Image 1 (cartoon, rainbow, N blue to C red):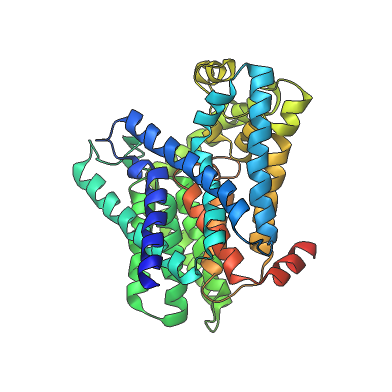
Image 2 (image 1 turned 60 degrees about the vertical axis):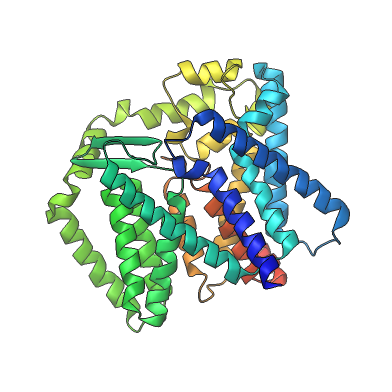
Length: 394
C-alpha cells in the first residue's frame, strides 16, 4: 500500500514539474519542453475520460463543478477562436497546454489522495523552489532557471515557473509557526520573503507577502493578535519608509503615479475589454488562448499590450465573462469556508492570487496554476461537502 502511494506521489510530482517546464530550465530546449508538456496534458485528459468510465461515481463537491465548468469554458473559447479568429482546433489544443493542469484536480479526486500526502508534495516543491532561487542567484546574470531575468529597481529580477510553491510553502510554515511556536518555521518564511521580494523586486510579491502575513496572524490563536498586528503594521510602515531596501519599488511607484494617464496597464485594460473583441459571443465566452499562426496570435504578437498585465481581464480575454465568473466563484468558495487549523495558509495563498487580479497574471500563470490546483483540492479535502455547500449557499 505504501509503495503504491509513493509511486502515485512521484507521478504527481513529475506531472507538476513538467507543467512548470522543469522550473523554466534554460538548458532544456523549448521544443522539448513543449512536447513533454503537451503529451503529459493529453495523457491527463485521456485519464480523466477513462476514469469517468471505470470508476464508481464519486460524491460531488461544489469545487468539482467549478473546475469542470472552467474546463468547459476552455472548450467553448476554442470555438470562438475558430469562428472569429480563424484559429484551428488543433492550434488551440496545443496552445491551451498549460491549462490542462486542471485535469490534475480530478486525477487527485479519483485517487482520493490524502491532504497529508498533498502537503508533503507542496513542502518538497517549496524547498526545490528555494534551491532554485539560490542556484539562480549564484549563476546570475545567466541563471539556470528563468523565463525572465534582468537588473532593475536597484536590484535583480529572476522569475521562473514554480514561485507559486514558494508562496504556498511560505504561508504553510508561517501558519505552523503561529500554532507550534517553532522558530525554524519562521526562518523558512523569512527566507521565502527574501527570495520572493529581494530576488524579484516585485511590488505585488511584497504586497501579497504582507497581506498573507497579517491574515495568518489575525487568524491564529495568539493572545492579543489584533494588537500585535497593529503594532507590526506600524513598524513595517516605518521600516518601509526609512529603509533603502525598498528604494527601487518606491521610485517606480512614484513614476507610474506621475504618468498614470499613460500607464500601460490602464491602456491594456481598455484594449482587452473593448478593442480586442470579435462580437458579443466572444465577450461571453472569450476569444480563446492565442496561437502564433492565427489572426488572434498575430494580433497579440503585434499588439502593445499583454494579458499578463491585466489579471482577470486576461481571463476575460481568453474565456469571457463565463471564465471571470468561475474565478470569482473560486475565490468565494475558498474564502467562505470556515478557518480550520492547518488550512488558513490556503486562503493566504489565494490572497496572493487576488493581489494580481487587476495588475498581474498569477491566476493563469503557468508557474502558479499547479499550486492553485493543489490548493483547490486541499480545500475540498479539508472541508466536508455539506459545509462547502452551506458556505456557498450563504
